[in-house]
Image 1 (cartoon, rainbow, N blue to C red):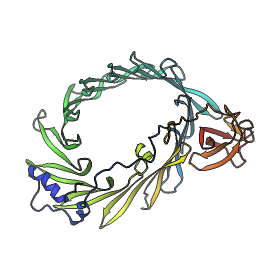
Image 2 (cartoon, rainbow, N blue to C red):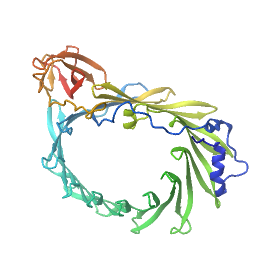
Image 3 (cartoon, helix red, strand yellow):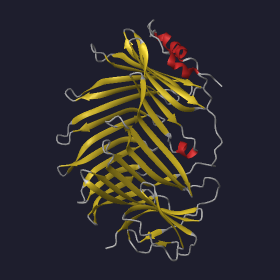
Length: 511
């Protein structure tokens, strides 16, 4: 187990070779928490034998007015899947104060020969009727890589088209974007790539065009060099000067890496004011690590004369190999002043880790000698059992009254298509709920489950609340209770402990 040396020692050992510390620059005593030992990252025994493949069943998000707390925007989307676990249908609703409710539904079609997505047809709801909106059409090259993507509107006009030239490994060599302008497709962007033997881009040139004149309106060039491990060690960025049609230098980055291929230093240079073809170093970033794995410090420098002067530091604190806090400091009047800190609640469930979720981050600002929490991002990922999982997100930020309040939240449901504890195969049955939309008082039939018994029908709203749960036999169906009002819901059908179907169902009032 290695120890994290005192931060001052770390900074001095990094900075002395560059001659950057003035004699009266001091680090404050409140860096003491960062001199405690850090535990090496360990591999915990997983409670489940494997990570499931998760498919999103539904997502509901909302933004709130920070003054009134009222909902000002809602977005929801739900998914159906075919027997191959490909998306077959989606239903999307948007609601905001300015435009009201917008509902779209999309149907997905796949090539029978290669199973790749062929097109998506979308309809928009107007009143009680559905009208075609557009089609998204996909075409592939002889190697099976995407060669064309276009959007066709309801007048059968192509209003958007992307075409691609790929190499045999599927990496882009050229891409062309066209938009419909004055009833004609016009070039909007053209990008070309040069790649090395590892298919890494060594040169990218992208040009944006004015649709009316056909002339280049803006563009950039990126050039890259790599080390033997594939890390970018040099990048030069240029943009086009439309007045001279010349490519002018914008900035250059030179990077070094640790033995573990983690970024160690990055130095930025900009064109010299006296001679734009020459480079002048302007900023530098140095990163240090604990156990050659965990990011310890980030130090930013600015050029001062012929040397470097630090002006920003971010330090990280760990517990049992998990990041729990980072703190930021700015140099002012030769003293380091803490400005903000973030507390991290690491995810301790393997599904959360696999899903890339930190269970919470609290952002605090240091002002006038005290700390103020300015925002909280809270994530929760819950195993509901029966291969059903729930994700909840909430953002709390200070409103104009300096009160911490919920400004946005999301709720999503996922289901697993792989076994997580044994090698048993999931008992997936092709099931269709009918009628859908469902009118109050009708009987729901589960087509495909007519001979099944011991079934449970659970109904959730899009915010995640359980609305009703009923036991039924597939041959007789069921009637939803009167308390279920009009709206869109998530229906989950189980047989014992086995989830058989998760889908959306729309409930409408009987005429």
